[in-house]
Length: 548
Image (cartoon, rainbow, N blue to C red; front, side):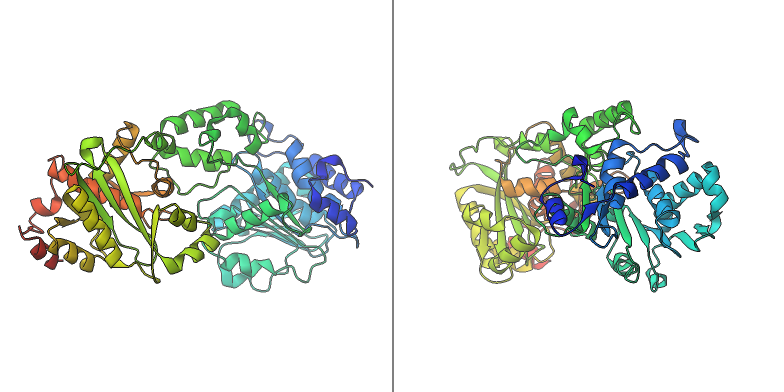
């Protein structure tokens, strides 16, 4: 039987044919009949009606998984990664796959499981499968559902389907025929995945399907699987037995507003206009366009874009409009407030000058230990080597930041222009601060709590939205702004969060430290430490430094 053109995706399928794989039309048709004749919708306007797979479900899930066979007649694909946005019928197709593997896949004593990061998430697919059984007279007559135990049994074939909790130790010894791993992006680690991964070793043709929306953690197991699936789709891998299916809007740095193009939306949402309401989609888009805090949620859940953080703080379209021509800074009268962040001496650290009389122009200085460059480039694909060559990043010898180089850079900047104050994160800074204070530079600690950082963090956003900031288009600071995540307390105070950010934000942290001193100096917000007498700054700079 020839392979339908809808299933020939590229060179890997051609390679599979050369290695003896083939398309079994009858097996694929059988799976399709099961979905359309035995499964019914359980919710909404289609509740009780037969489930007719949508085009993408038929040709990108059901037929490839059950139609493609190896030379020995078993299924070609044993592992599958499917990434699709919410509300495209993900839970429905997952529940259908679980029931097919339980009752119709020809496996006696089949063990089928749905797993997720927590019990509630794992139960979503199970609950959908349970409702499907109760909506289908044929399935209800055959299967025994125990909702309280999250179990569906097939007495005829002695098969069982269960929803698993995230309690890893109890998963040893499972003999898995089918596994549906839901929302893989939410997995906090690898334990559950690694425990289940080899659970089907004794089965003839196990099928493990992970299905998810995009996440934020690019060091995660899910992103690893996503990248592998993308290599499969692009034909860059020779693994003909792994199935990848990714619906997404691919971000293009040259077109930062691509996500706003309605022509792109259907690429990520094959159910748009059917299972997914177009009007509801457009409402979500309007909210994301007008409220930066909603942008990342829209990108992840509606367009399947891997974002840098859960919630975006700085709208990057506005940020990039702040890349204006660099002003002339040669005049000694150009005064500035400085911000210093030395918290990460084994990675990048930052010193930022804020020239406030020129409309808040930022001049950035970034440092990195030379020995760390190759690791970061190879492992995390951060172009540190390129930035060093372009003179944007200073590489210092060794595996930690050379503090003398930082001191020298700050001193030279203060010789060229008039420095009012430098605000700094006290962590990891005593030596640098003492040396600079002894040189007569006003060094002021900026504690990294909400009280100190709330106003300057919000001021940074105001400057960006009003296009009153000029960062000169510095690509390192741009990269950091794109990763910026903030923490919020009960009083709606905010501060940059290195814990929540997926990448370095030291340049933004240094900018906020500098802005905090500008605000205090101009009476916009008094220093909590000065007003509460927690710290009284002596007129002697060296004495101030010794108090740390």
